[in-house]
Image 1: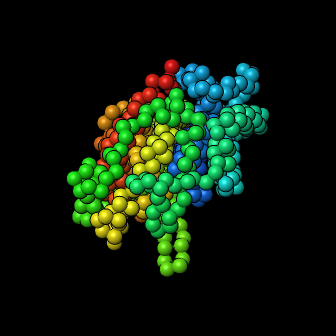
Image 2: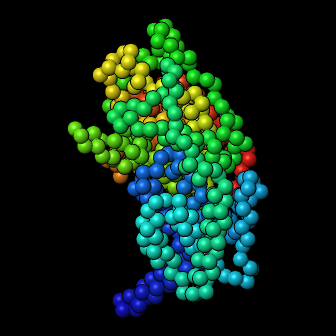
Length: 437
């Protein structure tokens, strides 16, 4: 028995040492990148960034991580030469040893930190996560941090040329006096969000108006008009919602600034942005598929571009058509006491932002992970909602779109035409940007 026990312990020791050695060789898993992504999302929620601005933060942070990791893998391509103006980031000398995973996470945090308000929250996160990189070689650690900082600096310099700062200095948005044009809605009557976002430099698009959708229906109060038929559709559907439809609307609400009103007291409930939900889906898919560091970073990067360009294209149309919201029309001509299930967001109706960016992200993720990629989406569990299962990314995208009708904040044509707009953006992105060689 004693001999058998000794043999057993020796075998156990060999197995443990084998896997321990393998872990040292392979380095930390991409879980550290997923953790970094989730921490950035938490800060974006905390700081209450609008959906378009949130997409910009995701873009640059993920570009920094991706560019570092492709330095290590010839199977992946840099964005330099594929994206107009993207910096040519020099790698370290061949004789300098680097942990590229460490450098990528550091670059991700340093880039994201400069784009949020609460940078100290990310500083706390990076301190914890970097402890998981158990480097024994101080030189490797310092080289990695130095390279991560250099890549972050290059990406942040590129970000300064996207016109974001100029749009901060624009005059206040002036509402149109024409009938059928958008005006702020209850309960907060909040000013227009990002009315000049179409002036932000796109990544894969040639211009903000490249995939301009067909115009919305002409405004008319004639009951027989196409416009009033859509108004009636919203009203009728929202008056008899099923439990499943209410759940769908709530699951895809993604309102970063839900305004609660209790008498004279107003306070906000912070939630995930639409882009943050799709970033979460990309991460869940990468984990489910067992993607390595480079594959995970590529999924995040491509999804970020789809979201970023999707919001630019959508916002270009929103402030071109300045289309009225269902709540305004229904209260004026159908039922003054009617309220939508979801809170109407503070920007024009056409096209549906959820529909555009969800369709664009679904096209890209389908290309990365394959068609009919079934997955469970647990993104909203932090907000008290159950996990939802989807047959494919398109299935999820379609549900995200129709949720806006159930929520009472969009007409059907804004959803359908927005999905077509997003699909074209996604397909165009795939034709211009390649991550794999």
